[in-house]
Image (tube, rainbow, N blue to C red; front, side):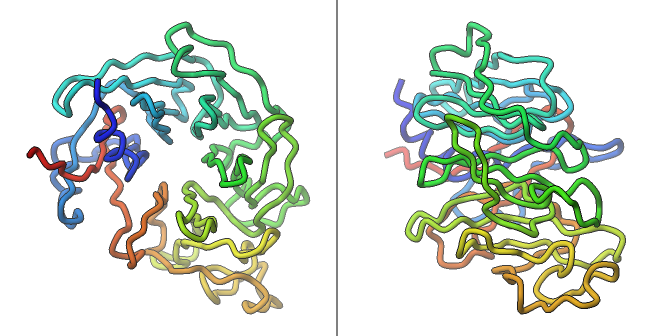
Length: 316
């Protein structure tokens, strides 16, 4: 099976799909039609499978297996792609009963899964997933607060895992410095250091292919209004940088409770801002010159559907 062209296509936006719908939301077909509007030229949007309940982050292996995490469902899925886009993929549920196993990342053939306070490692996952493998526990000492406790996961150019830990509240200042941060984790020992501070709730990270810098989203606080504060896309310059939360939101919006004496210049301003409460997921790496023009669209579909935006491949 020659999956390489399809892998290249999926890697552009692996993880674009994914959101359980609330009651009364449009049907999958209506959502797909709406999502097609404004899609970048040369891309198509389609449902890969509707057999992955509560899908969250995804990770695509070199062998063409798409691993999918979940949140409330507590399951992990392996989606084995067919020979063509139109062929129904095989879906294997290889783990059950986990606590919010939303974050996934592949590293040297192993699958890492962030599940609330734990990071798990499924060794040689492409060979093991059909056997319902038992994972190694990399760590079980992360904070276990469920508010913003679901995780995204990324592997940096240095081979370390990068794990956001969301604020355990809408707006607060926590004694545990790991809250509202991005942690750098040794994948062998689970030892962590705080890599980025003042990050309320990041659910999307990517490493720039040329500079190696980390780009990440941050979802802003609630209860300040429909249009305030903005959501953020931030760029990491120096380990230990502080991005403002809970003192400053966006570039210079002082928090009414924690920002009275805060100096916006003391924090790293976002690279750009997005509509308040957009709750952006994922931030795939791209070489496009305009970040705004290349921002991926999120397809929210009823409970189980997994959508993928992909380049239209030449058939010559």
